[in-house]
Length: 68
Image 1 (cartoon, rainbow, N blue to C red):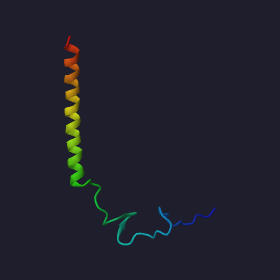
Image 2: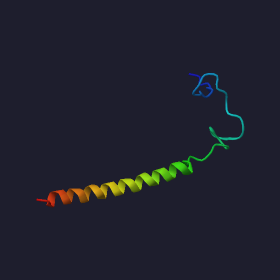
Image 3: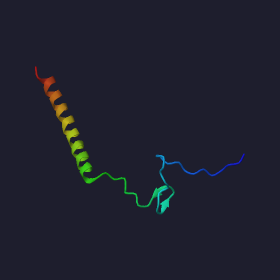
């Protein structure tokens, strides 16, 4: 059995090998995987809203069970 080196496959037909210096298959010029500032602010706001809503539901449940 003879093993031959196989060219790497890319996601789309007609794609070429990335140009530039690479580390393995990752380009050096790839941006970091950090979300933009707007998205981080929106996520923080949703986390706060979730906490406020959970506390409000607990208080409302307590008030409704205590009310005769």
